[in-house]
Length: 207
Length: 216
Image: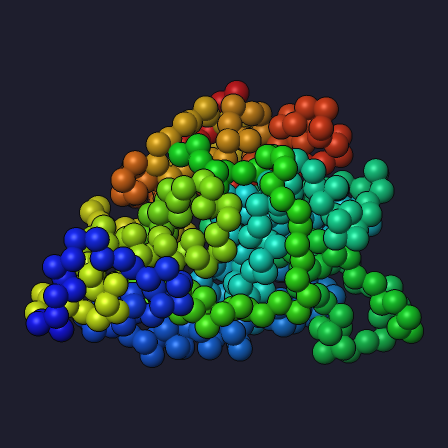
């Protein structure tokens, strides 16, 4: 490369294709010993294959099944979730907020995209979108309607804007008719959207 | 800064587009960008998240709204790498390190960062649960975590979450200093924030550093 004359061009263009640009930056930083591609592989694998809403569902199902755990979870979510091994980046300081027949909770990050990674994985696009971030705080009911959640006027909506280091997880109401279900059956009922607060759970035609 | 990123309460910001069975990363390069952020020293190792967020906030508003999420992340990385001189434009154009390029040394900002996690520091709290507070009218030119829609508003402290370093930066994205302080969850009535648009039953909680608050 020393002999080519690329570096003499004043207006040399960085490729416009983003995949090529990413590759170039990673390659150059790797050559200089500033990043390790294997470390990047590991991060990608972790968030693509290991960390996700299944973790949050385990927390919720356990809270439904074990009242003492639920008490700890609502009082000290970081401690209770820590017992299950689900703390980590963007989830070292957890707060769990409980839905009841009178209260519905909704989580947002208006300034960027803060989201509890260890229990929910990386956020979906809609969570990071301008539409969601702008509306969640001024028109939560209208926004929820678009998600198919219609709330009566006498239900209190509590919005949580994640502006500092606390990360929020919604504890949905346990659906009726699930009294006989095991904890692992319950886990399968819990959706990511319900734990962000944009869905409510129903058991549909389940017994 | 009063930028496009601070969008709580804005109107006409596009329609809600919910993708079913969405993959974690839509393209392989998105995963590389994410991994780069998590493993790269200048942000990951020294936990300069305020600086990273400020780099995102400085993207041109039209681009901020039209670029995909990881595109914004990538451009923030690319700008940072060029700005600090650890890569050159010619290297990014060729995709290879220049021959004879000196080994760059990244150095963390000073003062040394206390990171963003809760600190084990004993500090008197200026407010307690149940106190009414007024948010300050702060219009910082750097990164700040007091959204516009809750400035100069009356709220109630619902919890004291402990002591954290301030993440705010100056106009160059350099942290203002650790200045550890209590971070509170503050509850605002929807009507206090939005007037008639607010629903009488609804409340909005925002987590705020003590320096953003004063007695009403």
